[in-house]
Image (cartoon, rainbow, N blue to C red; front, side, top):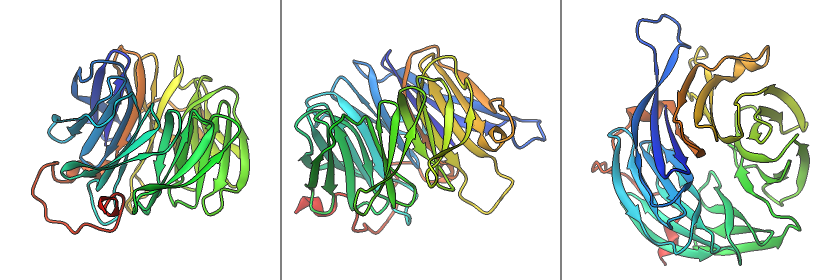
Length: 341
């Protein structure tokens, strides 16, 4: 597993989670630094990771691309003319590395890139004001965005255009699909609305204690939220009730959550969740322990910087080829392919 974190101090941080040597416990883990350097000219606002690839966006209007296994930079993208606010990779189930990268900016635009090589395919104007967040459907055919214009937009990624646009009445800060793509959730201050993806019907609404700053979908219809209450809260999205909570997971605001559950048949693998705080600390948890009592972190790293975002790549991705290798593949009908028309 690898983690990528960005900070106000313009630094990008890369870590790899590995078992401790000479330890018989499978749950004894450590975060090993992969790289750390000032990647941008302004604070980093967003990060994304998938397989061996990672990306960071900044207030300097640029996107930087990284190859995680080699801990190297692959260059930068300069297609936005305002702050990059959100990044998301799309990886088809048949591939072990991303097929597309989507980026959103403070001027309301969304750029679609081919991820191998990183070529700009299309720019879609999704909102009249800045885009706060975007989420790609697991099919890769559409994406949802929310913006400062208090609207929700749907993007047709096959045709490369906006296909739906509606006013919410309130500004949503986050929008995410669940793992199956059947539902999506939107965050507005301390409230989280769970919606059906088919017709956007509101299923249930979650009431958090304080403002939610980050969220991530997990297995078994769970949704993890973090924010100004410094807790990591797991919600049952079917009932809308609290499943469990890691109280005081950090000493400051939680700015990023990444769910890293292994996708294989070994039931002994820990169910891992990583979190980052504005005090610079990154922690890794086994969420199964939180059901019984407050768990201790399995691993911890202190960047001593003001972290703004966190992204992660799955445990099995580190065994995949490095970005840039000439690996033959079939290009599926996914995000961005039809947008060249």
